[in-house]
Image (cartoon, rainbow, N blue to C red; front, side, top):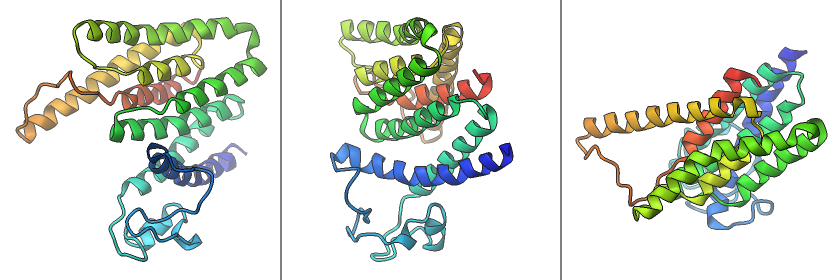
Length: 252
């Protein structure tokens, strides 16, 4: 039975990933995400059912729009595939726990948040809010007697970034935004208090990995190897990657 649900989770994940692509494209443009058929961003032609089959449409069409032949970003294919894999792993690791549903919701919105923050350097406030509400609903149903501990966990995991933002503000810099803090608070509501410091260590590890990779990339392309603190930094990918790795490794 577990194997069946794991495979089913992958199939569901690639379908959800297709919808996440819609959210990533439409939310920054303030377009309605619930109405209107999908369309090609270049020629605006409405897409048919055969253009929207997760993974396979991209492969069969050779990564191009059927109508204007414009090349489609591989991001769409990658997000569908990655979401499918994340759903598959979540069900495999947490079946038959009810936490599966909470983590699938959180992971889905983390994918959206990470891509929007990476491209636009901001996090739409509604997305961390949805994560927080989802966690509170879960806690209200299954762990209401411990809910105060989760609130404390949210404070702990967000506190270092709050301090960093205050220090940066006094220095006249803008290294982090409120969106990152709101996201950490929202995620903290799903992390048991005893694991909150462990999650902070995961964030530190992902910071080291990300900026080491950027440093090496800059060396290879002969760009300056320092980072401009006067510019907004996309940090949601670090927060999200650390969270996903954390829940997969710890299986809390």
